[in-house]
Amino acid sequence: MFKTIVVLIILTIDIFAYQGVGYGKNRQEAINLALSDIASQISILVDSSTTINKRATNSDYTKEVQSMIHTKIPKISFQNYYIVEERQDKNYFVILEVDGKALASTYAKKLDRELKSISQQLNAYSSKFKKYSILKKVQIERLFLSMELICAIDSTYDIDSFKSQIEELTQKRDNYIKSLSFQVVSNNQQVKEVAEELLNSMGLVGSPNGNIEFSINLGKIIKQKFDGQYTGKTYATVKIVENGKTILSRRVKLFGQTYISQEYLMDRILKKLEKKLNEILKEIL
Image 1 (cartoon, rainbow, N blue to C red):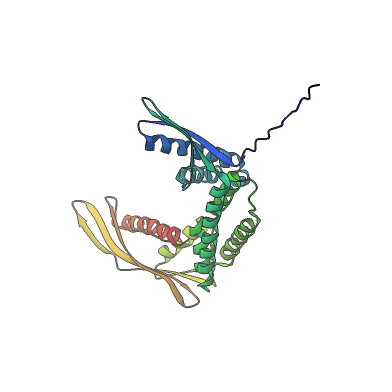
Image 2: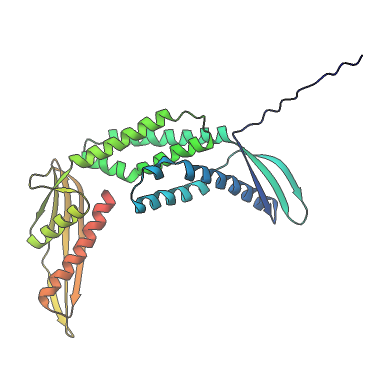
């Protein structure tokens, strides 16, 4: 009598490992292309799963998020990888494997350090204006993207702590901007109107009793006429003050020219001033 013995061999496959293929003129080029292949796989996962895109309703905003995805993912740093197969004929050929769990852990540590750094920066200031400026420059959408990159690499990674921290920062940013109102002060009525219109166009609140003083004082305009053209140059002193403390102080040079009339010269100078003020506000906000 014969007994049939059935042996079941169970192969455990690491579903959190990524494999990339690369062909190159030399070994390093093949490795780089294989790593690029893995980055592309992760990019597709993030692009399709990210909730930032799903939340976005503005087309320009969506494009900005997609741009973040396609600039961030290719910069993924693979510190550890395993060569599954390697051979050489006319070109080099490699198959690489990257441990998804280890990669996710690396990016989680980076995000954790960044969130702690943001918290330290916010605690260093009492000014709501400075706090808002910090959070604006941080680009909270980029933090969400970092979190979702971790989740895309390893879907089992617990991101709840990151999610709650980033959502809290989002709420703080929104609350800070709602609490800011700008009182425009100037020695020139036209300049004051330009500044108020600019604040309004940026969605910032202007008020005679605002908690942020936005002061723009225009210097004397030196006018000249040469070869039928009017030219004028001056400067403006720009200050932003909160609770008696100067947050920003700038002196900007202004220049205007026109063939139309001397009166139109002021309009040209105001256009230059508007551009400078817009640059300053975008820099700090």
